[in-house]
Length: 109
Length: 109
Length: 109
Length: 109
Image (cartoon, rainbow over all chains, first blue to last red; front, top):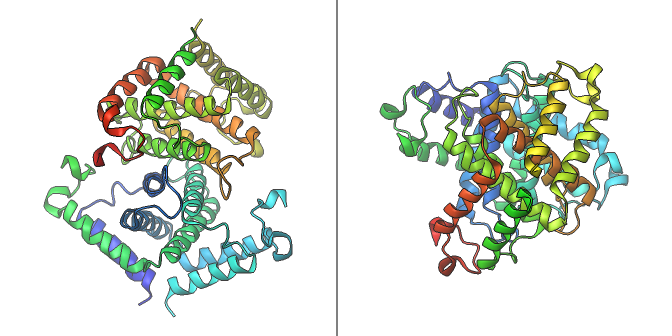
């Protein structure tokens, strides 16, 4: 089995054992993901990029990923497909010759 | 090859072609992830849970996932491992008998 | 004294007593504001709009406001002026006749 | 009239002219505030703290403040009171003698 499929199956199992599907509507999943993203960001507050506590980063990033996988599952998205599609789309917004070595946003390139 | 390994390789290839590793420090990756999480949330603003535009959700969720995978790669985390570890940890914070059918946070259970 | 001026003076006094100005660069203030915004959002997770705990909302909203005022002070912005300017700008993006009773974003009106 | 009262009155007038009160439930106001906080953060992405575009910071901070004031109004909070109350509470969590010159979070002091 592919790893994303396996992780998702475990997340769904965890959720169903607790009868939590009733709370996991699309909007609250997006909210939950944002809350976890904020907690991830907290690992870097008032610090240099390399000074975050690795354990905290690991746990909060895992939470972000968990909600992202649950959301993909809710919509029936194939995680690999949607990320690869987005890379392709970004390749058009950020052609190598224009964007190499610059952090400028595509609409200002 | 496993999915996550393949997606991550594509993301790194896209980044390296544009010479963007120089911008991708840990803190700015966490910031980028938060910005994308906010854009995902925008798909649900002033709407019911089922009224978000699926195309927008798909694209913004792909962005969130992309930064999450890049962050995992930056720290050398194994995505599958950290999510499964977190599920196990959450299973202790939310034992089935106490948390079944309730959305109460663990510290108030 | 006007209330925003008074609140800001108290925030600066609190900060200076603790010698925290050294941490309060513009970027980390924006990060702190986002973290608090995420904590505010947590008051609504898995709940209806009217089911948030008022005490939690009050405290997290106060934190958001505190960082917003500190950020305005850092840049030397006049809070009243920038909000009134933005209202005027939004009035042009959202003319009454086009936007009345609809939540559609200006670029789709 | 005090500044906050005046700003809030203008925000409510803008909202009512467009008949938007129907969308402004507490949860979506918290979501809107988060989205704007993310846009504010975008001004700092891939940049040093002092390299954000001031015009963008000004506009996004104004949006954050607008939703924060609308939220306070929705709950009937007195902005000055809740921020001053929070400062007092934080003064107990962060006593000067323990927290001076350190960015450590109160639960680790």
